[in-house]
Image 1 (cartoon, helix red, strand yellow):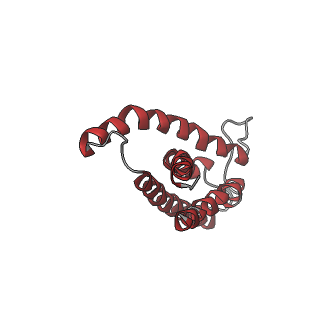
Image 2 (tube, one colour):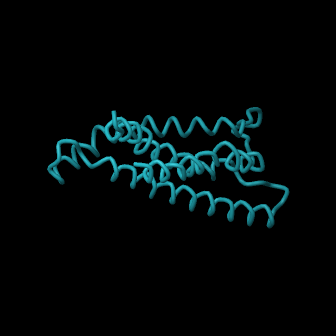
Image 3 (tube, one colour):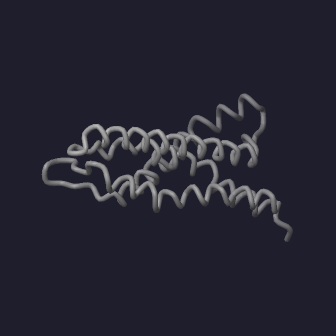
Length: 149
């Protein structure tokens, strides 16, 4: 169980990137939604919650019934499998952040007067919301179920 706890430290470190690096990325981008409205970069964290709510509904309505039929397990996929899905999604999040940073730097170096739109970093926030569906609840279930009384 200690190894599982240690393995969940990595997602926490990645989630801290949302508070720091992802927001710093947003500061350097064009944040204008209209000519008079500027999106605060810290408000992009709300995209995580929006996508988490959407993915929880999709998870309950489609993913769980499909997995129950396919693997014939009433509890759906195991807790460790759900944690593994989250870890894999975190890899995709960091790849998405890397690719958007490479693209951002290339666009800025080509045309420094017109920065790219802030919407180019939305995929990493959306993936984080989807990934949270798989781990946050699962970690609580796992530690309540597996911890000695």
